[in-house]
Amino acid sequence: MNHFKKSLLTVSLLLAATQTHAAGFQLNSQSASGMGRAFAGDAVIADNASVLSRNPAAMALFDRPTLSAGLTYVDIQVDVKDVNFAGGQIDLGGIEDAGSTKLIPNFYYVHPLNDKWAVGVAAFSNFGTGTDTSSLLNGASIAPYDLIGKTEVTTVTLNTSVSYRVNDMLSIGAGLDTIYGKGKLTRDAGNIPLVNVDADGMGFGGIVGATLELNPQHRFGLSYRFSPTVTVKGDINVINNQELPGLGTQQLAIDFNKLEVPLADIAQFAGYHQLTERFALHYTAQYTFWGHFDQITTKQGTATIASGDYAGVQAATDVTAPLKKYHWKNSWLFSLGGTYQLSDALALRAGYMFDNGVVDELSSLSIPDSDRHWYTVGASYQLSDAMTIDLGVAQVCGTEESLIEHSALVGDVNAKTQSKATYYSMQFNYRF
Image (cartoon, rainbow, N blue to C red; front, side, top):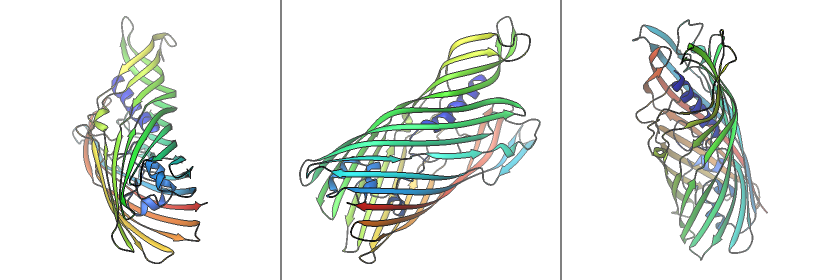
């Protein structure tokens, strides 16, 4: 029980601190232009400054200082049904929508210094969501309380980058990522708080990239993002029962001060091809090394007896506990998109993306993950030589998954989950 609850806690804080790029976690919301084409070719197209979120080397394609700022509205829908345990004898039913809505801003600025060097800064989010499965309990006297509750997550990535044009064909770039995450989590058994978390953390990573221009109509981009180990700190409280020598079974309150969360690296390849005067084709293949994520350890915890004759007695100090293995797998993402220049002022976009799930052997009600299909459309309208407005809409459809997750309170819990989302994005671009 102690082991599982700390694992559940870690999963939630992982979400709060990570810049994840995989099915089940990802919010692709870096730009409205990218959303319209399912982010296909985004590491090399460089039609606005949002390319900073994918490939710093592409700044070499800019000849004027450029600013891009946008806002994305996301409606996340997580359906949970047929939640049952005790061999199906107890059925908690389901929830049609356990997800939430989010407003996610972004900002980018690229500044060419000369014909060789360019610098840029960016602020965007790679993840942010919330779920609430509390209504599954519905006054139940027996339930998997350790699996059901509220989770709220927000992340921000701040990036500074530089690029260098080696020659007419090759450009290289590098950037520093500062990743801030904040998460809240509650798991209650009636009036007893099993888990109560309000924590945030920061980590530093980086990205390197390159672009290869065969000519103005055909070019390729490659980038590799080095993800950090994020240190998460805050109010991290867990209640559980544990056998203590000479004292029997006691209810312990454990306060953890720190979690160290290793994140996955991300490799991305993109291509752009202007096939006709009006039509361009672009694509992306992305590989995320989630297979490196195996275990997280809690750090600097203090255990105190919470009730009874020994209430307030410190049971242990500097508690460090290894957590369960996740058995996640490396994942692929593929996208294909097209842009059609309808007129001098109006460009239309469309795209499709397949996003491969990361959960392998161990599924989870806490993380309803699956493969996802993205269907996107978008448009750009040129207000003047300097100003452009981008719009993008995406419908994300996840597959229904059946899972079995073990609860320390009631044993194995069966359920079916399905995640989907709708994105609406707007962006303003200005070339100085």
